[in-house]
Length: 270
Image (cartoon, rainbow, N blue to C red):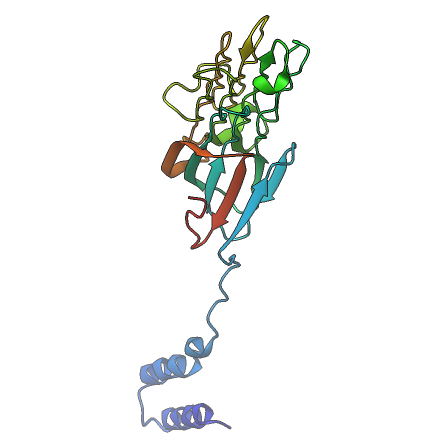
């Protein structure tokens, strides 16, 4: 018998002998039988440790599932560079950052753009690249002109262009002519092409660079002119609201890149 039970027995005996008030007995009995102070604290719900994950160019869709306990992710996207000739560089891919409101278990789709490729040697155009990079055109030697770089973006809730939450524009393709440097992704003159897709150069003569992919793609160059870059976007969509948005033109060479982080991780690509 512990001390609680001993005192309870004494109180009941005193009440039986009429030595204490019954209302006092009831009050003391409730105090002695209340075990709330000894109950264990509730177990907290699941949460994820801070972390990050990187995605590189594969030529296909990649995906990421938001960890349990996470309601916000930080996303950094880098667009791909346009094709570079032996002398003139292709436009550099843009950088775009935002924090995105998400739900645990949500699926995020990642599209990492590829670098622009040289035009064909036979005057028939050139290859487009993954995620919107338009083709370049060369009337003879393909290395003298090339296509725009693909955009890099994330999509939530679906895989259409309308599901894009953050986009970093790709750079325009260069040409081997004076003034032939490709336009940067995310630049002031970017994004005058088609929704999500850079325009492809059509010829029929000279050398022309393709437009970069983007929120809106870049335009193809005219004869002996480079392509322009695609535009960037950080405005979110639907319930996937973005905050702390930031973007910068022309900051990435080569293929695109995405980093997603959560918890205490910050902007690591810059």
